[in-house]
Amino acid sequence: MSLTEDRKEVPLYIKINPIDNVAIVVNSGGLPEGTVFACGLELKEHIPQGHKVALADIEQDGEILRYGEVIGYAVHSIIKGSWIDESLVRMPTPPDLDELSIGNKVPQPLPPLEGYTFEGFRNANGTAATKNILGISTSVQCVAGVLDYAVKRIKEEILPQYPNVEDVVALNHNYGCGVAIDAPEAIVPIRTLQNLATHPNFGGEIMVVGLGCEKLAPEKLIPDGDAATIVVLQEQRGFHQMVEKITKEAEEQLKRLNSRKRVTCPISDLVVGMQCGGSDAFSGVTANPAVGYAADLLVRAGATVLFSEVTEVRDGIHLLTPRAVNEEVGRKLIQEMKWYDHYLDLGEVDRSANTTPGNKRGGLANIVEKALGSIAKSGSSAIVGVLSPGEKAKEKGLIYAATPASDFVCGTLQLASGIHVQVFTTGRGTPYGLAMAPVIKVGTRNALAQQWHDLIDVNAGQIATGEATIEEVGWEIFRMIIEVASGRKETWAEHWGLHNALCLFNPAPVT
Image (cartoon, rainbow, N blue to C red; front, side, top):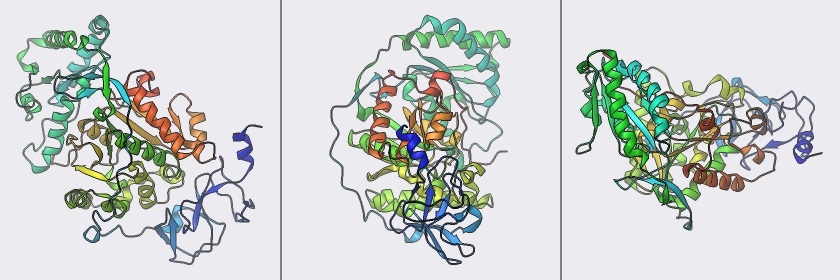
């Protein structure tokens, strides 16, 4: 009998913090009523995998503790050994943003991690790239159909002649016209598009396809002084000439990109994004802590690491502001939380709207529990910077990049911030991917890794069953980041050509 099979015969639960009065069931398929754990705890009812069991009697309105934090209050009294599902948990109020400690527990730097490099492409502006891609931006959604037609033709007829170029990507979006382009919050989608157009994986080649009458003129997507090609469809004589113009300009850029070769680059050139989607109760136990350990390794090696998702940080913000390297960074972190609180207020919702049916089926009672598990992706390093949505990363080290929690919106904004690789944890499973940068999928459970054997890149579920440690899986993720960044290993999403459309965050009015 294998270790995995043997483990399945033994009822297991995971308790995170010594003061916790709940734990989650590890066993695939859950455990039936009457199950007795080694400690003597007996289940009063069937409890699904990942769901919480009461480790002690909890009075009505009593605190429910997980991660050593209050995740809610008991709606009515709960007997030891009972299933605590979301209907029994009343959500607490979020941390008061005006009462937070800042920079009073700044972690000491961990020992430098030296000798690690990756094979990347060196850009003329000194940045590095992990892919060699031709990116074609759009200034308005109106041109998307024509550009898609042209890109299909480029891939089929022209790209094979330039074997060193990996792909041609159209940066389509739903912005550019019919919008209040001068509204204060319009800066978010505009700077996002500007930074996407200049992503390092595009090798400094900039092409923008515009219509000719849109509010967001193509020139606004090009940094001052940068050489760029602009194709305006209203200046062409018919559809055929539009496509010919795009393909001709693309071929000139493909010629230049094709001369690029991989060279050895220091890990300090890498920008790595951390994100989660389809989270479950194991996310904060297995995958996210392992990703956090990898984040610490990257920071030690001099890289830049981004973690994001405002609503999945908000209820753990009191654990993050003490790690801010200084008062300015701490205040900026609080400012982003306040901005998003106001944004949600305008829509007459609060952070509780974040938690999905899948999250709840996976054992997460509410956004508080989800957030406490989510912040584990940040590891243990000091937070050295904070980015507003769509801003470009400039510092080295651990940075908070404020984004919505939506996978597609967060992914788009992290790309605008300059990520070369994204590490994405999932408990429920998602085939999510990005065309501009590889996505490494880390599964939270053995069952998911087995079910989606050709979609999950790293199985962190072994941590829950004791077959691997957080540190071991963290090192596995770190080494895989290097292999993927170097082009020596494909992620499953890359292998199958899976990617989601860009999804801009536009908090400004649509007119």
